[in-house]
Image (cartoon, rainbow, N blue to C red; front, side, top):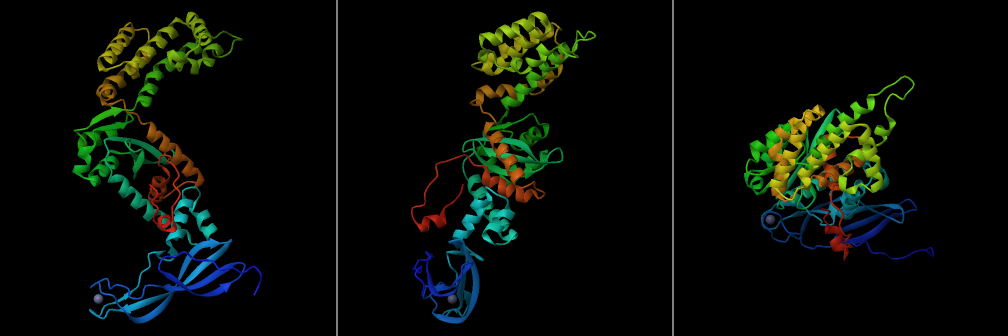
Amino acid sequence: MGSDVMRVRLHLRRMRVLEVVSDTPFELVVGVESSVRRPRCPDCGSGCSKTHDVRVKKVRDLEASGRAVTLLWRRRRMACGSCGRRFLEDCPAFEGPVTARLARRLVADAMAMPIRAVARRHRVGWHQVNELVKAWSALVAERRRSRRCRVLLADETSIRKRHRYVTVVVNADTGRTLAMVPHRSTAALSGFFAQRGHKWCKQVKVVVTDGSPAYRSAIDARLGHAKHVLDRFHVIRWLSAGLTAVRRDVQRQHRQPGEPAFDPGVFQARFLMLRRQDTLTDTDRARLDGLFDAHPKLRTAWEALQELRGLYEAQDHDKALQALDRFSDLYLTGQIPEFHDTVNAIIEWSDETLAWHCTGRPSNGRIEGANNLLQVLRRTAHGFTNPTNYQARGLLITRPPHRHRQPKSHTSAQGQFPD
Ligand SMILES: [Zn+2]
């Protein structure tokens, strides 16, 4: 016997090691059997001592010192003395053809790398890893959906840009993704609400979405009791569109032969103009004033945008309405027809925009964070074609960061629940 020999424990609950079948630098094969003497009959519950026959089942375990570990489980088929039923014994440490701890590791690795890479690293099949991920994700989703959800966020993200989309639904109270439903239609969101049932829908008090008419009709149909709020960042983008249109118009004018095709000063200040007024330094202000003196229309548009932003800077609903009044006074002078689309959007979505003040000022920030993670996932996976697989992995990775908990013992490591 060599000098590098040691005795190690397998740490598998209710398992006994019979023999080491193969111990090479590449693999370790160990024969094991259950240490439970009288397994319980699943029908009548009595302990059975009569073994009908024994079958050997291969179970893959975590690698040990870089070697693949296979357990040869002598699995007994018992014959019940009371009811005569024959049944295969079970083991809590095994989940089908892998140990529970290897299953946890495969799922954890699938959060950071493609399924193919996980399968290759642990020398198991692609389908096996994928099935585990799907099963685990379904458990996680069920658990998340059982929690209270007062504020619901919904937004779209793409599987293939401009081709296929999924609707992402997030519980704003916990920050957890609840579902990723194929398509971005009324039926997609409506179907999710229908699946959750009337009682679940009733607890949702506020829904935040972007300006999608499809989502609006789903919410009107299923969550009529809840307050529908338009996401602030989407509204700000609409509001800024008017100023951008004016800026483009202004910078194209005054074209003389030999001059640049556009006014570089105006063009270079395009992001500065979109900044919030109270974040501008004195230098920024002076630069903007210079531009506004040269192009008075730009000043009017910029001031109009500041009034529109007042919608959100206002302390309450009434002050927001006052800001809107001041904007309409400016708009009605007819100097900034470029804000036409913005005005139409505000009129169409006024209830949803102003509801922001009386619903605790919710935002879609958490869903945008989830979308960002989903984009990273799409890249690492080199794209998805199957929305079910996308949802399974998407649900697992989109969770807010929390303190890493060290398992206290091997028992808790086996039962650890990624949420
Ligand atoms: Zn029985």
